[in-house]
Length: 323
Image 1 (cartoon, rainbow, N blue to C red):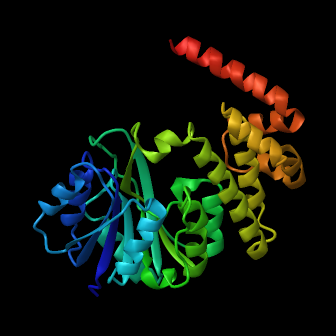
Image 2 (tube, helix red, strand yellow):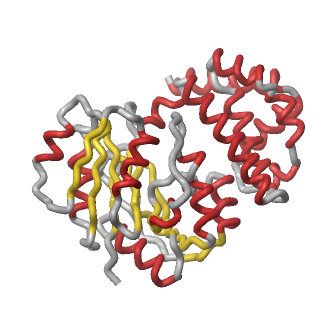
């Protein structure tokens, strides 16, 4: 089998990163690729860099600035491949990534495959090899991974996805996109081939969306709304899935402790404390999360105000010590 695979790269002002990203795609061991670059209204030198590439597999679609969500839909709507692979322009992958994920799908008869990503801060990567472990997870098992934050399971990138899974699903026109889509794709897939091998590198830098999100009130509020929407969506399908409550419990505490007055005002309007008590389960203390986080949740349960005071004092002492 040598089916066409469409790699979708959405880029807005990505002149700093586009070469590294494109080079790792062009040189993949799996060569039957359509490389679809959606230039989302870039104002820098991105388009000229794209045009300098002579690889006939590269197709450039230039649009006005639609934002990541809608520009991803442009990629999906124009893709000719049987499978889709999304990669963020500031990230990069191993040269055998697409071949590896394609084999996972074929050998395990699944419409979707995934492997582990790794957060990095530069391009100098040295990894020690680990023993390969491959599992075929049901949608329910993969959703549990997603809800417990296992290996960035909730992202749309780092996955090879059969295009048919997008027949009735598109990204929504909002700041947050993966949160409201990935779980739906996983449910459609039924089974997912999952490997513990690291093949995707998520580059952290000050201009990345993730790097800015904590200080971005609008993004935080949209993320909160998206997570609550996902909670109710999954509750209808998996009413007894404890991980669904555990995920939202963790989110409540994380957002409550952020130093953002407008966000706190919004959470107060949403009566988050009451919602927290409504869905709280002591099973959160027996799941696979760090002890430090469990202590924060316990403090929040006892007294949200006390939880915030202690958290701020801890952060203040920590940074004072670091200085």
